[in-house]
Image 1 (cartoon, rainbow, N blue to C red):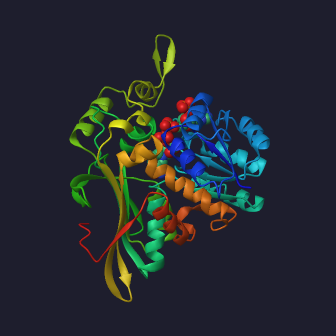
Image 2: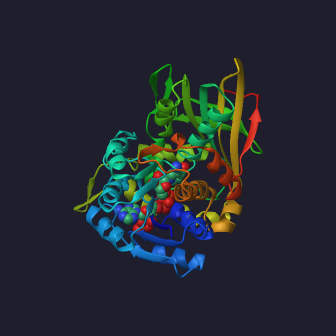
Image 3: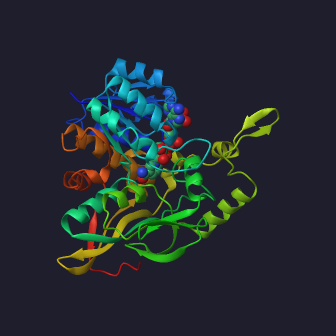
Length: 397
Ligand code: NDP
C-alpha cells in the first residue's frame, strides 16, 4: 500500500494527479486536497477514478493539515500548492510522521525572496524523525538538478560551468498570460538577477543580461539571465562549479506588458487601501489575468529546457547539453493542462515514485541532486519527458 496525498489543485496539481493515477502499480491510495474542494472533485471527474478521495484543507493552518494527515494517513505528501505553504506543510509532516516532496522553495508572502535556508533548517528534525523530505522536484528546480547529477556521475570528473536554459516557444494566443501562478511568476521575474561566479554571487538589475541562445527544434530566442533557486543548492552540492547561471526566454510583447504592470504599480506585493479594504495589487492582478490552467486548449509550440555544461573528463575539456522538448498540445491532450504544468507535474510524480520504490529514501531534507539520478532519468523517458544529449557541441555560453 502506498498512500499519497496531493495538496494543491491548480495546473501542476492536475498533472500530478493524472500521472499518479496512471501509475497505479506504485500509488495504491490517492487523495487530492486543496483550499477549494470543488477543484479537487473536478480533477477526479476528469481522471474518471472515483476511488481517489478529495478534501478541503487550508495549508496555511498546521492543525488542519495534521488532522487531515491523521485521517488519511498518507506516507508522503506531494506539495503543489504555493511556495508560501512549504513550511506549514513540513511542520505538519513532522507532527504526523509523513514524508514530504515539493516543487518550489519557501517564500515569505511579504517579500519576494528565494533561498533554501528556511527549509534546510528542518534537516535535523526530519532526520531524527526518520522522514524523507525532497525539495524542488519539478522541472527547474527538479530535472535541472537531476540532469546535473547525471552529468556529474556519468560524463564529468569535474563540472566547471553550468547554464540552465529554459525556453518556452509556445503561443497561447493571449495578449498577456503567465504559464503558472501569475503571482509567483511575476514575483520571480521582476527581481534582481543573480548568478554564481568564482565563489561569489553576482547581482544584476532585473533582466539586465540577455543573449540569443539556439534551442533544438526551435531556433534562436532572446534569453534573459534570472536568479533561480536551484543555483543555490547546485553550487553547494557540486563544489567544482566555477560559474552557474540560469536563462529564460521572453518575447518582447511579454516584456512590454510586464514593464507596464510594474510601472503602474500592479506588481506591488504590499497592501494598499481600496475603498476601505486592504488589497495586494499583484493578487488582484492575478484575479483578472487569464488562468494558466485555461491556456492549454489553444497552446501551440513547445518548451525546451536543459543544462549546458562544460568541464573536465579524463583531463580533457568537454561540453554536454542534455534537454527535453515538450509539446503544449501533447501535454494538453494527455492531461488537459499546458506544457509548463506538465513539465512540473510529471517530475513531481516521478520523485514520489522514487520514494515509494525505495530508490530515494534518505531521512532528512534533501535536494533532488543528492539522490541517484539514474532511476529517475529512466522514468523521465517512460513518463512523457524524454531527454536528449549532445556531446562536445557549441554551448554558445
Ligand atoms: P496554481 O495557482 O494553479 O495552483 C495552486 C493551488 O494551490 C490551487 O489549487 C490553490 O487553491 C492551492 N492553494 C493555494 N493556497 C492554498 C492554501 N493556503 N491551502 C490549500 N491550498 C492552497 O499554481 P500552479 O499549479 O501553477 O503551481 C503550483 C506550484 O508549482 C507552485 O508552488 C509553483 O511555484 C510550482 N512550480 C514549479 C515549477 C518547477 O519547475 N519547479 C514550475 C511551475 C510551477 P485555489 O485553487 O483555491 O486557489
